[in-house]
Image (tube, rainbow, N blue to C red; front, side, top):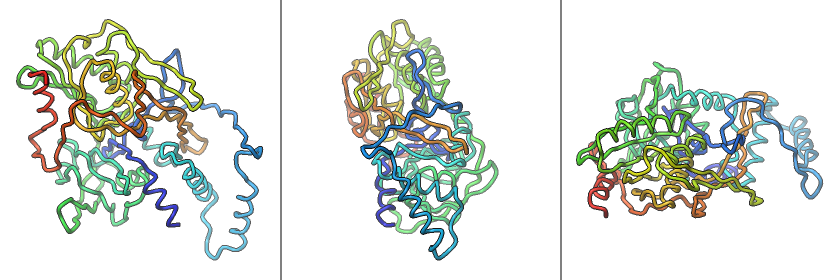
Amino acid sequence: MKTTMQKVIFGILILIAVLALVGSSFAGGFFAGRLTTSHNNGIVSPILSGEDQPAETPASEEGKVIDFDIIQEVLNILVSDFYGELPDAKTLAYGAIHGMLLTLDDPYTSFVEPDIAAILNEDASGEFEGIGATVRMREDGYLEIVRPLPDHPAEAAGLQAGDLILSVDGESIVGLGLYQALGLIRGPADSQVTLEIGRPGKQDTFTVTITRARIALPIVEYEMLDDNIAYVRLTEFDNTASDKVKSALEELQAQNPQGLILDLRDNPGGYLSEAIKVSDIFLDEGLVAIERDSEDNEQRFYSYDGDVGEDISMVVLVNGGSASASEIVAGALQDRQRAILIGETTVGKGSVQLPHNLSDGSQFRVTIAHWFTPEEQDIHGNGLTPDIEAPYPTDTPVDQDPQRDRAIEYLLQGQ
């Protein structure tokens, strides 16, 4: 049992989640990216519901994928000999599935039980009920707050970046998967949840009680900064992202900015089609990304001339919360020498998941390929290295942003 738990805790790579505490809104979003699935006219779009067709099952060397006989033997012994009450059949089946997936050494191929799958489907609407924070699951099994969302319950309760959520309503979440932790923290608007918090630099933990709220996340935030620098922050790649970025950019460019900062920090990903469209806003004709499977079959995605953001000088901000679709955009802009990256190394979530909606409301997400940048950078497990490293110390005052300041400095001085 200890070995299995260690696999659960340490086998999970960093998963980014935009929660209202809702967990990542998009598969990355959960898995940092509601990023893929069926191929239609050269565009990969996610399947959030619908009639997934079962693929033909390949046989193993022994002629079958799994030895059902030995599983049946174990079940028979459990039924006849186990001292105690067995879980119901569905719980046993879910446990067997989770155990089977632990052998794959791929945390992104995952089984999502119906209650969490329902949250994923709700998250696709862009509105959530929760506490309002950006979080990540650390490799040591602790859920860390990356950023409380401004003017939302988590911030009002005094939670800070770097805080660790240790328990929810008295139940420990240390070592749980992201989805299980999310299911405990989420809840109806106006209901309350009590969180036990560990804060770096403080020896004792403390508890806070937060009233959940209905939260509509702003997908795009934009403004004109001092020194005539335009600023656009994209928080996730939902199916409106490219339209909203283009609209914001058109409004800002009417003010003749000297340069642009595209902020992809803490963006967990989203739709691939939107990642390609957002890249296209800033790129002329050329390669944006490559999807390649284990047999070296590949699909290439391109940008085209004629968009509003192709000429403005720009910088892209990234950090350890930039994942999946964010890395596709940042990698394309970096490789095509369209923009430099400033900040910290990104997550390194460069795998493609195909979601299958199952008959009982659960969802099974299978890794089918990896992403590569135009210059063949393998995003997965590596992340993107910024051209200019710029840390964001945990004790940075709320009204300061050293990474954004460094981007402004670069745009004004060219170095």
